[in-house]
Length: 89
Image (cartoon, rainbow, N blue to C red):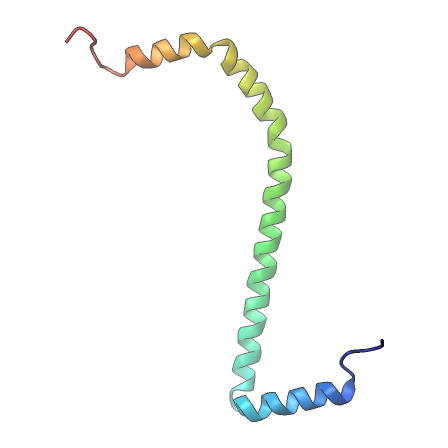
């Protein structure tokens, strides 16, 4: 099928953009596009870092869940007594 956009097509697209936005606004448009791409790249990197941290957390969370389940019944009674509510009132 070949190349969808050849050099002649790209030149026509650039000419149309130049006519629509004008030569004065093209540098500002390019700067804005570059900043957007930089922000997008940073957010993607942050999401990948969060995913790698989340992948390591289930092992820690599983051990914490096992610890809390062994003290679960006494922990709930402590929470009820420390809430300051008096059941005899």
